[in-house]
Image (cartoon, rainbow, N blue to C red):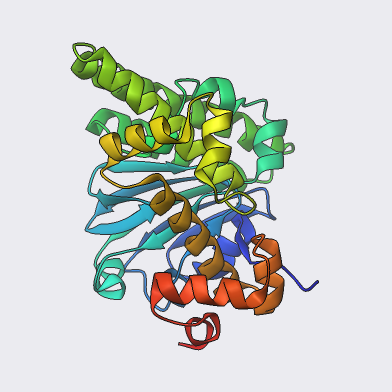
Length: 306
């Protein structure tokens, strides 16, 4: 089988973001301050993140879809994206929006963050917090602190001191612990708003667990029954809760994730349509092509060449 879809890693980001101010060490990490992004054609299609990424917006705004939910990243906002997520820019004139905005990117490889002794599972332990609330507004004082961290990373990386990689690793740990504290504050506020409605809160937790399962298993499992079994409920009950919380049916969520994966593979891999249909566990290429066209209005080959 040929190469799978291209994943966004720190080194890929370094090669993409050639303007602005970048600092990086191989595929360990990249910190990039960017103004007026342009000529980044990859942003025109869904792309899969294969690292831990944080994006700050200091001016302008851009709308994007993450985990099939749409968010607007605007001035003063922080978005944290974990590995495996597919992102799609949804702003109608996304090239113009990017050219009028300023962002700071921090991308850290899975191995590097693991070696830095950062446990994301416990750090963001409030279940699906990051899945459902990846984009939050942070205070000016918090932005200044993060800016200080970034300045320090630049100074250390540009120095001739020994143990640069290890020093930056320790700072990255601190940065992500700061992120966790910001999200904890956000979740505490969310809990205060929903504590008066325990049923709604319980239903939302089930929906969030469903979304995580779909994110992790949609390449091989497209039946609602699979996810209901995992959550120890009936398919009918799960479908009811998913529609109640999100306004969208469970099959629509599953199909949405499958289509996002298919689009990413079609644009950023050299896999054939047949190989993609196998990767996504369709019985044959014809079935996959019909499914793709029913969802997008295009055949896989038409989408690949548009």
